[in-house]
Amino acid sequence: MVEAVGVESMLKLYPLLRGQQINFPVRLYAKDKVSLKISQEYNGKNVHVLSREYGYSSRWVQKMIKENQDLEGGEVT
Figure 1 (tube, rainbow, N blue to C red):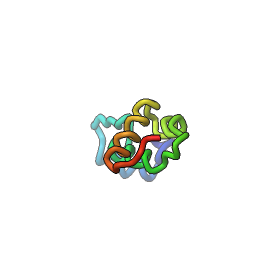
Figure 2 (spheres, helix red, strand yellow; figure 1 turned 90 degrees about the horizontal axis):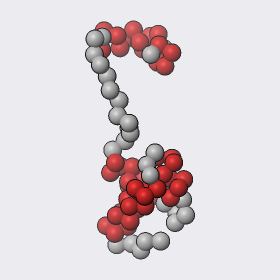
Figure 3 (cartoon, rainbow, N blue to C red; figure 1 turned 135 degrees about the horizontal axis):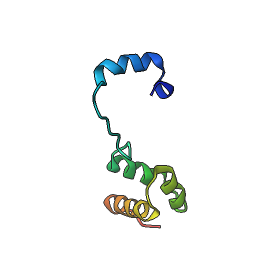
Figure 4 (cartoon, rainbow, N blue to C red; figure 1 turned 90 degrees about the vertical axis):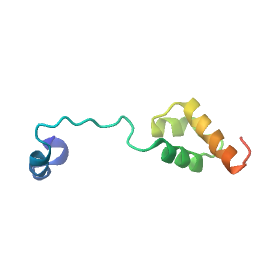
């Protein structure tokens, strides 16, 4: 961890976290926020780019785009 956060930060974290087991989620952001961001960035042709960028499958990205467009009353392209 010293290599990742530095010596000073490690010395601050150690007394707070010593003896603790820490698990980090696979995905950092909430799905609903990612879904909204994907829908905003979708240009009709970039499903694969968005799926790689956000770490979700192309099928999931397409599903989220469709759901958000249905909620907004927009057409699916």
